[in-house]
Length: 317
Image (cartoon, rainbow, N blue to C red):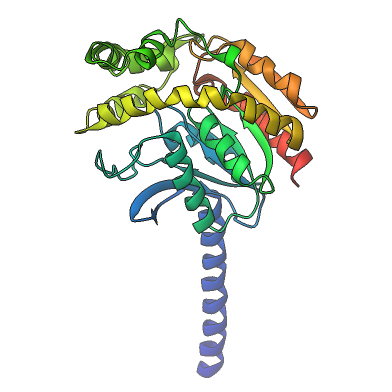
């Protein structure tokens, strides 16, 4: 009798353990996870969520943010998709290579993101691009056109008319006059605490509802030793992105990836004509203008993720 009880206890104990492991695995897959990947000796931080067996969505962040900007997307879509959001070198929680030891250009950032995705074993993926995510994402698409299944652009610009010249004023002046004068202007205005806060709150319906952690974190990162120089180098290099817009537009016309446009129409940097440009070049397009600012996910993540779910389920399942 005691032996029988021991056998049953062992069986039930094993089943309970297996059930616990299964539940833990399910929970772990749907919850956001964090890690580092060493790419050519540089530690790149990433957030991921979902089952890697599901369709993959790569989330490419903007300036001055990091993968933090995709926190709601990671949580809300992890039940059906595998999502991964890297921090570029010198952004967010990624390692900051010293000035002079790393080429702070968009070509080089894209090279590291491409290697990161390769090391993670991603064969096919859709991309969500926002701000700096656009020049990085389009470089990935040109290098690996067979891998990109669809594009979601949230104020990720690829059109010259999508550059608001007054909003870009100090940076455009810097392109023509790379001097201490314009560097000082950019540092004092764009890289200030109020400057970062303005980027998140300008054009929003309810500025008081935007999470302050955004600009608090970005400002803290911007004040790390050497960080201003890194940001200035990338601002100066941004002019080379505009020169490549025709090439990226040709990619859209030739490859015809499905595109979902979810655009904050009150963006001070990338206005509505940038969103409209995609209509000229892409046949399979869904298009939504939202009454919010540059970081549209801050106010509209529920609407945007709902549209993303429907869009991706229709095209990459």
